[in-house]
Length: 553
Image 1 (cartoon, rainbow, N blue to C red):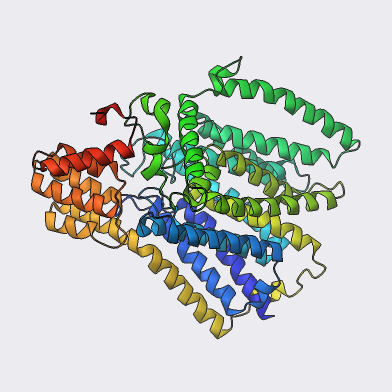
Image 2 (cartoon, rainbow, N blue to C red):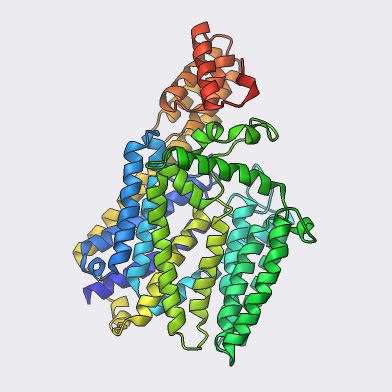
């Protein structure tokens, strides 16, 4: 019974972490109102979950061994990268400003995936899918407010991005919501009122996706639609023949679609975007980093420190040499470039376990259309397609890891001969005192770990508003402050012609982050830098950005 009570509490925490991470923001107290706040939500609940599991390790012992090995390897390779890649450890722990996909984030996501499998309850996975759909409701309403021009928050950029900070992330998230809704619309057991509500939500979300001019949501929905129809056909007579015809149709449509993405054919005006060309530059750099640092990578969330050196001459001269990025815009390449091939292989092992579980469940479905399973498979597939062209933004990424766990766990829950008759009773039972205390300690530990970057950013936000230079300097020296905070401080001093302060901050920047191009460039051009300092800066810049004509002297 204790195990069932724990699983019930784990399920409650997991049903909270997705919506909270996607929706929480703090534009009133942070320079980064998105990522660092979402990291706090993920870490707090993940450590609550972790400590609950540790309070009764029996539920962990009952989990599939191959999954535990894959998660264990993934965490091991995260640790080896953190220790041996040579990147700044504070940056690896908390991640770069505006991304926050460092060790803490990936550790927390791994715990959440594992817990999603441990729960192993069909009703929980049904609730998880419905929670994704329900999370889309406030997001949709807020987007409509943004479209109407009545957003009460004074964002620096006036676009429709919901609480995710970027139109591409919003587009992808709403694509997942649409995919999750579709199986219930097609299911005969869904009530008429629910179908009408879901159709309305789907229609509005597609309109919002179209208004963002981001094709990510369209592709997520397109992939999910294909998967759902394919699974729906299995419940019809002669399903093998119908599935074959459907597969051939999709294959025929895939050819002009691929041509359109390459700016060829009749679909090119609708599918091709200049950002596709730019993404190929980012992918090339990520691949090069993987080749150059195959064992430990360049360091967690440290892609941006190596981009200029790895991008090559063509990418450097395509447009402006100052066009840079701090992510490969491909989650798989982000993982391989940041953590090396071992980390990528461990991540792929987790996905292969999910594919195996999904295939086994699909084979066992015996011609019955299960809308929950269809929604899990289709949204998971849609997320993986999005992962090929986008970033692990925490508000979207949390669902990718939840869905991976759900795909594995759903098969386990259906296969189990012991579908817990005690689960409903356990829901109303109190946790044992030891487990309750452990959960509280875990919640506090996760919040404390994420509080450092949250607090540093908040202090910097307040200090810059006050205009007090001493407070600004104290804020950038806080644990959790990033290279961005130091660079912005140095640049602010430079713009106000306080050159001594600018040089001091630039020197601190390159001391803590020796691969920071902005810091070295500032030292190069500051009028009060010594000749020796300028020569050192130029030498470093030529190494860090070898094809940039600005430094070819």
